[in-house]
Image: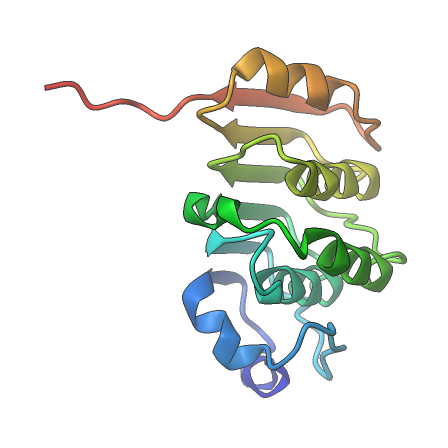
Amino acid sequence: MIELFKCLPVIEHFDIRIDIIPWFVPDLVPQKLTTSLSNLKFFRLEETSFYNDGRGLTFLAVLIKNSPNLEEIELEIDTDAYNDHSNEEHHWDIWLEYLKDVLLKHLIELTIENYSNLESELKFVKFIFARSPKLKYVNIMSEVDMSKILQTLLRVPTASVVEIDVWRPKVLRK
């Protein structure tokens, strides 16, 4: 991963699928990049999982820590990964320790697709809310009862006034 980002110091927009991340993340311990991604404003992580082997979380943590000027984060959660929650806490402990000194000074918008209102996802949202003083918009797409998600999210302390939009995906009708 370090070698990849050495080649991309001026990248502004980054979109990656989670299934190639194991090639870039050899272990679960987040690493400091030698090059700051100070130009990165937007990233999208597709088919990410807060479970399974934890490499997606590690990759996400490294991106957040080394991208001081992020303005927008989009995550598409892989719903197929919900079956294995056995090692979830271990990865979150590593992740949160690695990010304990991070402040997302420029983050304005967070979008999460396939949000399930599970504890690991909520920990991520709480982290973003607490560390993002300019956060204005949170967009959550979910199959879960929207009122439950809103009840949970409205109780989370925020570093700014945040507009939360929770919606269901469109269902195609024949």
